[in-house]
Length: 450
Image 1 (cartoon, rainbow, N blue to C red):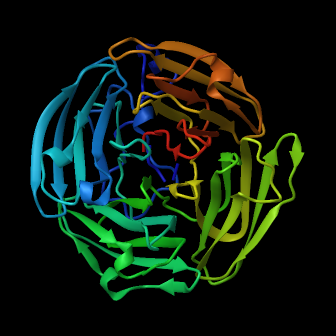
Image 2 (cartoon, rainbow, N blue to C red):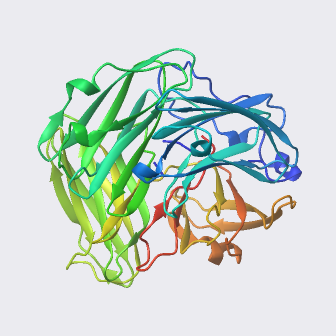
């Protein structure tokens, strides 16, 4: 939840969200510290662009769709341009009605093993999400190309496959270097250096071709020229997940919903790209139990993992809240599932606005809202129960430095709904888990409009 990557739902929302102008352009020289958000863009925005990647052919397990969600009451015209890794192109025009969505399946139109897509929208308020047909993988489309990208936790051992889906949404070539970090240290494979991605082209970079039979691989993408959209695609056993990564290293991450259930697996995977060892500490809150901090030293240019579940020091008692801190900048991922396979998810982001869309129509096992500030925060929820329906508005107060479930805050479930969350400042983190047995096996990203 992973960067990124993530709307005015009511005309009255204009009273809450001021128009902020057109979203960021593609020629930014570096990743901005605060990326523009489609969610904050009012109806005066003339156009926006969404860049989406991650989907594959059946061969690589991530068959699926791109869903465009119009969070305004006005119809939006969209020009869609898609590319495959074989060089095929496809373009179409469509309209997304107010408070409704449209689904695009690039694999039905193009021959190839992976796909990238640009959606040029006439106006603001349209958000995109990539999801697999097999429930379990979602990645937000982004509005600004990336020049630096980090993602942790990939696995290239037997029974697993890890790849980067890289899409160049611009009219000029992009050139990039890919480096990796594992328990055996730093690696910069020659085929991954000076990699060129042509204009409006898409490539699939199989990590296992160079980083053979290696668990817990961290990846850094450094774009030397141009910008790209990157999504990691991990297959672990039969489980496929998207890792949308992040655009910066960090020394602190909150994972508010980490499973400790019986028969579940939960690991914090960490990569240290720096020249000094990183002392990483996990503080686990699991009421009513008191859990001693978990500490791990991650060597320079290396990776490590810390087991939350199963762990004899941590009781099997549902969801835990895990706060990670590090003495050096690192990047992380959460791996969850069972011994038969795991899903990867990126760390959450902070924002003032989020969209929750029940793409799979099954609701959520957990939908946690975290206020990371030292002051209470008022949160508005604009809830659309059915396509085309004007949303209803609800308000709640989230206490300082606290996490609560959406249902307990607003008295509403999320099954089949689209919900816009608005706070007064970027102090909100939203964490979603899909229904699984045991609980917490699939953690997916909400959309924050980036």
